[in-house]
Length: 205
Length: 205
Image (cartoon, rainbow over all chains, first blue to last red; front, side, top):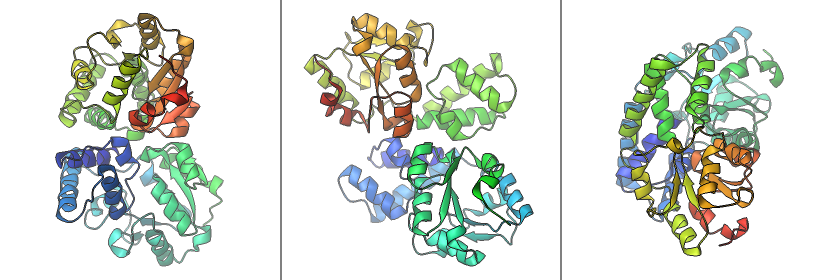
C-alpha cells in the first residue's frame, strides 16, 4: 500500500499533478476508472487516454523500483496453510492481473488447485462485487455466509455489494473505525491475529 | 509521512528487520527512542547503538532519494499567511532539526521573525510536551487557549500533556476517529479546510 502511494504520487507529480499522499492512499484499491476520476476532480480537469496510460506506466515502473521483491504480509502464509489444514473453503480474489500476481501467489505458497480470481476474470473492479461473486461461484460457496478479508474500504464495500460479511486488516493503513464503518464485522491487526481468532468468526470446515 | 514509511521500511529491511509498513506508519512522529523500542519489540531483541544509527542513516538517505524536494502540503502557505494577516499568534514546533528544516521553512514562506521551535531546542521529543510548551513560552501564549495543529496522534497526545487543545489534519494518513480519540477537538482534511474553518475554533487575534 505505502509503496503504491509513493509511486502514484511521484508518477502524478512528474506529470505536473501534485496530489496529497493521503488522498491517494484512501483511493488505492478502487477501480482504475474511479481512481482517475478522483484524481481528475482534484485537478479540476479530465484525465484519460494517453496521458493516463503514461502515468500508469510510470507508476508501475516506480513501484517495481521501490519494491522489487514480492513478500507476503506477516502471517499470510500461515493463515492460508491453516485454512487448508482445517478444510475451510477459501479462495483469492485480487485486483492484480496475471502474470504480475504470479510471484505473489508463489510467495504465499498457494497450491495450484486454489481458486484464484484476478482482475482479468471479471468485468468490473472493486468496489463492484464481481471479483468476490466470481470467487464464491467457483468455490461453490454461499455468499451470505462467506467472509471477504481485506485491508482497504473498497474491499469491504465490494463485500457488502456481494451480500457477504467482511473482516478488515490494518495492513492497508486505514484506521479501525474506517474499516468498521465500511462494514467490517471484525478488524484484526494482521493475518496472524486473524488466524488465531478464526473462532470469533464462526467459520466451520 | 508516506515517503518516511517507505524509507524506514526499506532501511529496516536492509538490516534484516522486515516490519509491516502500517506499524511503522503508526509510530512515525514519536521520539526516536520510543520508535526504536517499538521496533525492538516487534523484533523480539534490543535495537540500539551503532546498529540503530546505521538504520537511521539509511532512512535519511533513502528518504532524500524518494523526496528530493521539500514542498508544502496543500493550503499550508495560505494558512500561515492568513494567520499573519489576521494577527493570530502562532509558531512552528517541529520534530525536525536545523539545518534540515530550513528548506521546508523557506518553502512555507515563513518570515524570519516567526517563532520556530525545533528538536534541538528541547530535551524531549513527542509525545512529551516540550516542543509545544517551549513554543507557547516564546510566543507568550496561554497554553490553555492554544491549539496544536498536527497530523499524527503523537502531536495530539503531546498537546494533551501540554494542556493545550488540538486540531487534527488528515495529511498524516490517520483516520478521523484515530485523531479524535487521541484528543483532537476538530479534524480537517487539510490546511485549506482549516483556514476556511478558523471560526469553528473560536480563535481571535
